[in-house]
Amino acid sequence: MAEELRGALGQCTIGREIIVLEEATSTNDSILHKTTLSTPHGLVIFAERQTAGRGQRNNRWESTAYKGLWFSILLRPKIALAESPRLAAWAIRTIAQTISEELALVAKIKSPNDVYIDGKKAAGVLVEMRAQEKAPHLAIVGIGININQSTEDFPRGLRSHAISLAMALHRQVDRQKFALALLRKLDSTYRDLFGA
Image (cartoon, rainbow, N blue to C red; front, top):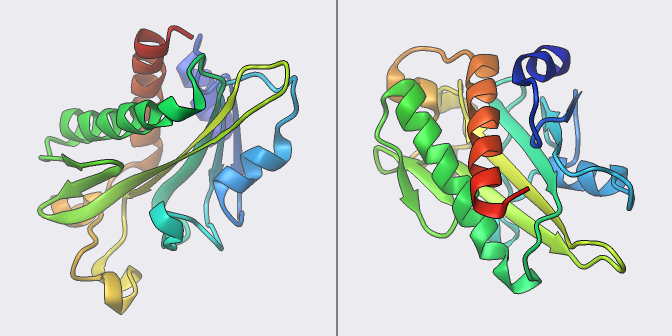
């Protein structure tokens, strides 16, 4: 998947390097472990399965293996740490737009960082920023999107308020095709908004 996505993206900032892991505690953690001062921004790490995926307020993010898109992006935006909500707003808006444009679903943003379809949560964003000495701040934008889960893939406690794109469409979604469309849109909108 990594090579195919990288080849299809061409010139880009987001996705200039793509890594796909079979398993990770969380993709945000994986980015942190891999990043040094010289790591270029735009690195994207996907995990087919997360054992400790995180949502907002330390909530667990359920990451059924091979059923969703769980990935994080390393960015070095020229913004203050206090402006990190701008990154969450950009990412969640871009996810909602991509869902609407690619799949003709009505995707609604629930601020600050969730996407809902038919009144149920389909995607979320977790932004973590770190101050860096003598370097631009580090931002990790973690994204989780429920793609091909069925109701049974969600824990009982989540079934009444979680949905996947496949459940909304009543058909499976090509994860790689959707990932490519989303990365392209994230790249173009990031450069427009943050000039990188």
